[in-house]
Image 1 (cartoon, rainbow, N blue to C red):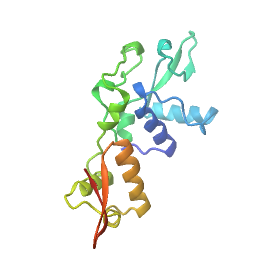
Image 2: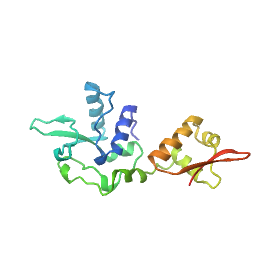
Image 3: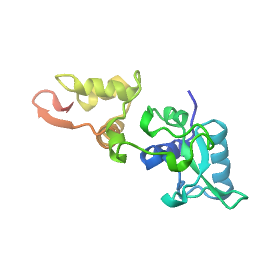
Image 4: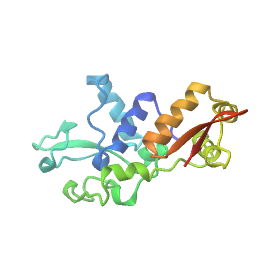
Length: 186
């Protein structure tokens, strides 16, 4: 599996949430030569791809080409796989800029629908967390922390961020006498 820097992971995560998987705009903290170096590394690894800008859609421009056109950056299937997202076939970016013109790139689902179809990779701590929360008895923060090796605040963050916001799962909690607060996926 490709080892990503924090910046690369942020760029790919943002692109996965945007229509057409466009990686622009880059994080505000990434400017000039640093941005060029990060992007060129990601292109070399096959995580991002340059495609011609569709001016009619108002796509952001990464760089100008000599013939008066511009290019934008698109997250590739390999880029999404590197952050643990299986790409939808309907949202796949073209393999090369010449293979399909940008105006032919369409999505059959609204951008919000992509979030509810994401699934974690098998064998990850997030997958183990989901299994524990889907059990009939649910799980406590302490039980999850023991099983994953995470600290309690990380468990709470994963439930609120990854499960509720990113995956759209309905996580409920209730206080059970003698056991404490139990979390479950409804």
